Amino acid sequence: MIQFRNVSKTFKRNRVLDGIGLDIGLGERVALIGSNGAGKTTLIRCLLGEYTHEGTVAIDGRAPRAERTAVLAAIGFVPQLPPPLRMPVGQLIGFAAALCGSDPSRIAAIALRLGLDTERVRGQPFVKLSGGQKQKILIAIALGRDARVLVMDEPAANLDPEARKIFFELLAERQSAATMLISSHRLNEVAGLVNRVVELDMGRVVLDDRVADDVSLAGLLDCRIRVKRAEPAFAKALAAWDFRSSADGLEWTGEVAGPDRLRFLGMTSRYVALIADLSFSETEKVSPAGTAP
Amino acid sequence: MKELWLTAKLDIAESLRARWFAIYCLIFGGLVALLFVFGLTESRVLGFIGLSRLLVTFIQLTMAILPIFVLITTVRSVAGDREAGVFEYLLSLPVGLAAWFWGKIVGRYLVIFLPVFAAMAGAVAWALIRGIEVPWGMFAYYTALLATMGWCFLGIGMLISSLARSTDVAQGMAFMVWLTLLLFLDLILLGVMIQERVRPEVAVGIALANPLQVFRTAALALFDPQLIVLGPSAFVILDTFGATGYKFFAVLYPAALGALAALAGYLFFRRGDLP
Image (cartoon, rainbow over all chains, first blue to last red; front, side, top):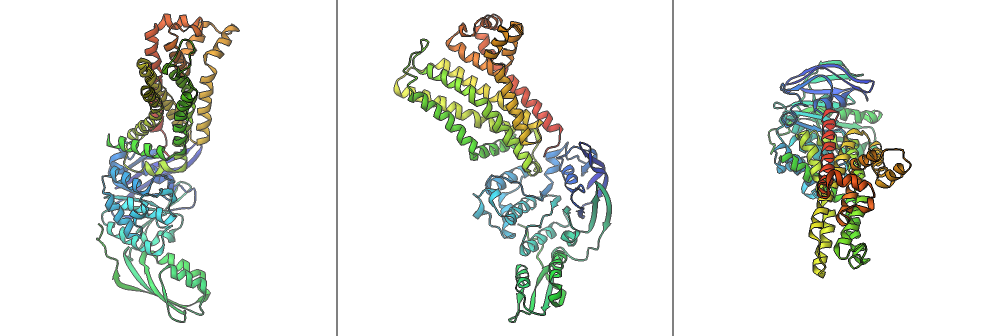
């Protein structure tokens, strides 16, 4: 579905991409990882037809640069840094929906599922929203249409755990119909979301590996944690994940979205000396898929 | 076409929210108000009385303000958007590059032309109410001059925006262009000619290539058809074009220059990296 053939990009004398070759099929969920300056954003911009480059990039055999409108109609994009748009949220949604041939109410419905009522922020300048609100709007615009390719740069970085859960559900609903390219600095941020990992370094592909795809995007894990003593900082961190504590504050229970488990363990690792016991069990509950508006 | 109008609408809405637009409207609205307050419609200078005197003064002042205003605000907003990452996101949406670029031009053009025209039209409306005679021919020609002046400098501004990769460079380039055109106005050219450093034909040729000078001469020609104030260069202009021919030249040449600059800007924009 997506093909990169010997793609190179040079800025002045700095070669940022160096002969990238990749084939990504329909339904693949690819993590594009690498340190700063590895070439992730440049590769994404080549895919979006925003950069000129050597070699060829094609989506369903079409070049994004030469056939922009047709190609980009099939791509939903969430940038790493929200653009500083001064236009009101309502206008942004209307503009994006009109260009993509989508319905603004569909975008609003997805934003609502993520916990943002667009009616309330409709007249506010996009740039004045909080980081999380901006991210929700951009995700809603990307998912509020029939995109066959989803390109997302650190998409869940600014979302709270509850919104992340819903975001994973939304991705699960698209799993079979779309190809996903998710960029991140760290693999643990996106590991649970993907079934293939591509690592870039100095503009080259240094790792291209399939990963076990056992955890469903919409799967949930029951988690139980016992701590040696009540610690306010840890309690605050767990409360942010919607965990509930026992009366004495020594036992905590809650649900963690399957793709978020590494991120959750990353958080708990900071309090490892405090933890007496930690267990995960797969729950029968699965976030409902196919309920997209 | 739908994409073009969507982009134009977006640019218009963006401009209406911007502070520069409020200042822009205030300047031209204020100019007309001041000209009325100072009683230019009642003064008699060079045989003028009535609205023609006000219109001549208004267009002379507009020539001094509009080009630099259009150049700076255009390059600031376009290059600034690119620098801030706005292009990266908006150009990831399915909009054609031609629709995006020309849509921005259409939107921006309406936003820069309409306030200047409205100020002038407002003066005419006020004159009608007060029973002052309106020189309709002059009003129509000045409208054409304003329309072509806005277009010319918008085209140049869009070309600079496509060439420059940062706001600072774009602003610097815009200022240099304006300064260069200002340096080659008739006064400086006359000085150079007097010192016999260039042949008169070259000086007149440069003046005719300079859109600022073309507007200035055309505005003068309406109340001084023999262009006496220009001295000997008037003979070259009138012999080459004739009075009516020059009026057409003064509208068509800057319009063509603006269109060429905008087209070159589009070709650069399409050819290079977008964000």
